[in-house]
Length: 137
Image 1: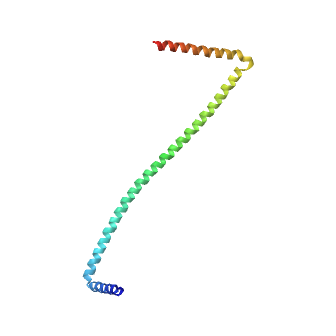
Image 2: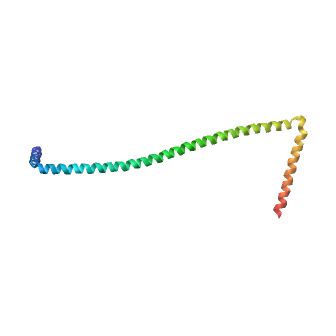
Image 3: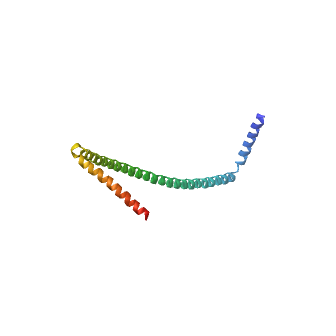
């Protein structure tokens, strides 16, 4: 069986050699092959150009997204810095208020604390009655 395959290939080689003996046929087949190669290469170049344009548009979109992410991260960093500064300022104000409250509740300033508590209770009752009066109407 192997010999029949080798005999077939030898006979097909002989047929190919005999058909190549005519130069007109060879030159026309070469011309067709060259034209086919040119058409194929121009088709591939068009595909490459199209894909290159697609890649360029995707790359520019990715570049814009990256710039937007960078800007957002910078804005978030500034926001966090401002928030930290605000809390630091609040801590200083709270500390000053607490110091004043402690000074007000000291032994020698106790009567000021009584006035403060009495005023707050009075304001609460006044607001309670005013609100009750307005809700009835």
